[in-house]
Length: 365
Image 1 (tube, rainbow, N blue to C red):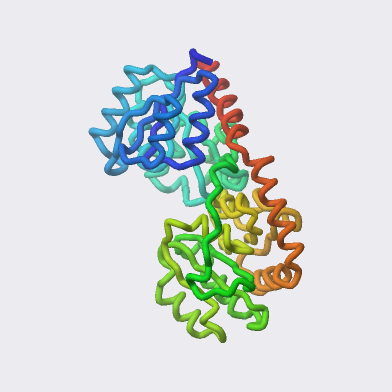
Image 2: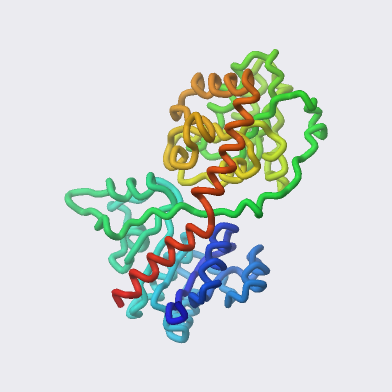
């Protein structure tokens, strides 16, 4: 594969995408990465010998950044231009005008694209785009169903490739929850998310608040915005507000996941392939998710976790209570969750599918 050259444009990067790029580089695929110079995974790229150059875009229309991408296209002559994140997509498509490289975009959430939005015609609906890699089948289906007055995306432009992980990335020791006055015997449920309306955090609090106090359950709220007035008001109105621990953003979130019995993501809509649930599953923490978006593609109901109807606080409360009353079953689901990541969401599999896509497009050049 030494004749295949790919220019990847991203921002801060992420662990799964960096791991995939390294896996692609190992067999000889020519990968060059443009990313922020403070990307936390630059050391990974450097140690693996993956060429990279600094590029920090300042917006959707960064003229200097667009020219920098164009210079790399002219000098490197890649067959594939792979654009990750919003700003790289807008500026990369502008830079690719007149260049023969095939353009691949990444999409990680369901919806929020419209044929009536001019900005979407500058990104995902741009005719210059050759493929859109969807992180979940639910994301791909949202594009398939997108349309108005006969205007639709060609289905051959859409491909589902689940984002892969490596269990070796998840070895942080469990946190000591005694720091939060949680007794060792308690059954601990976490919810890791940045608070947005679609994430369903009020529903999570209501479901947890309805559970009997004698179950000795504690709830960790981890992420930006967890201290919003609405959420704090709901907690204060619950019968046992001391069971809720509003922790906000934490650098040690993986350790808190590892110390929990259950991880919940109560999304109402537009979910892609939730990273927090993947990380929790990697730590053998049993996932409970709604059926919104791609979550059911990740969690097999009754085997590697539980799936409940989106927006149904009663169903979520019932699921949590059933796990609390049968801790052996909960641990079994957690073990299966880890195996699920190892067998079906491995970074090497993601790299293989991405290489097949690159090769297909390069053969059309």
